[in-house]
Length: 72
View 1 (cartoon, rainbow, N blue to C red):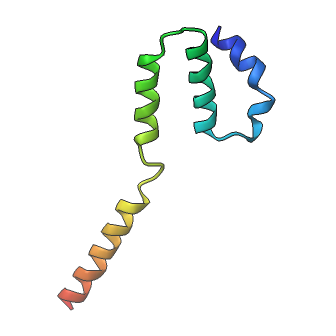
View 2 (view 1 turned 180 degrees about the vertical axis):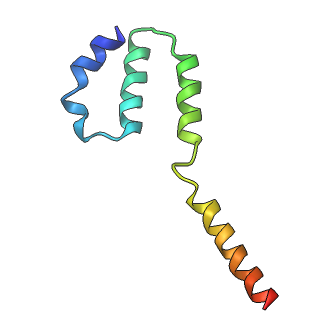
């Protein structure tokens, strides 16, 4: 069922974001009374993860700069 759903959506999904695609999938599951509770938990977890570690790296860089000034 899921594979058929994806085949039908391939063309229209070219310009959609990942979030919009997942919303479409869950809407289809709900309309067809398919239990998606476990999949929903996995997707929520995946969207909660940061896309990169740039924020953490910038903090380390600033900390390093401050320590260099203090030790001079």
